[in-house]
Length: 289
Image (cartoon, rainbow, N blue to C red; front, side, top):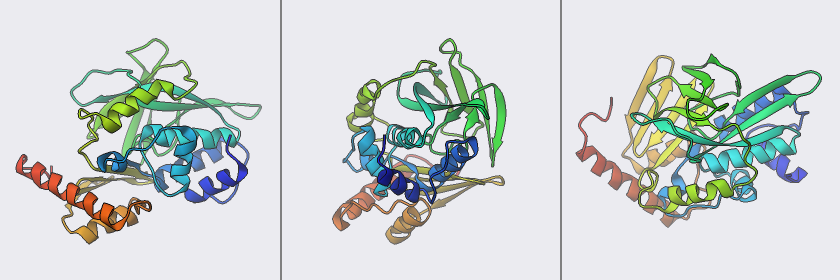
């Protein structure tokens, strides 16, 4: 459990002033605030300075105005929710990229929250660690749910008995995520996966700068030097090759100010981003599609 000072600091980080009872409406407020104010990102992995997925360290990461990816985000958020009185379970998940088969391989940490009291009896899919999905919790039963320009589908998993599957309408970086029903009790299940993501030469994040976040009417993504803005009307892509403009977008749009990076480390990060972008452009002719 978090100390009261940590709870207040975490809530302040996501723009919430008051500690409230653990109701469904407060859960939705917390989820929206988290995905709006704290992005999903590969920044530290890309920069060669990965951080631990220990839950207490992840909480401090959020409080100190930094971020991470699913293990950090959902790990920290689950600690906040439990400290606020919610019943939270961790689940093994697996993200299905476009063109590949569904899987549950523990490369994603998923959450469910059970509301079981006299006023409410419902289980919710809670996930602040999937970048551009979802904006609010989703009911843990089959159906299609619209949130801004996105439609999410919850269905039975075809990978494991009694599991569930979350799908997002295309275009998207992945087709869906499958989850196992049994609860996971500690982070040991995910440590080896994090080590692969953060240190292996085969990791998709080692040479990809990627930061994403949701808001009420859409999402933003900065992939290298390409800023993608998705709204109901479609996706707009902007190439940013100016250093000051790139850092301005990173800070003003995504809230990532790299507070623990020195001036030299920020310069090195930008040089790597630009170098990788130029190499990528040589290999493609239609980056704007």
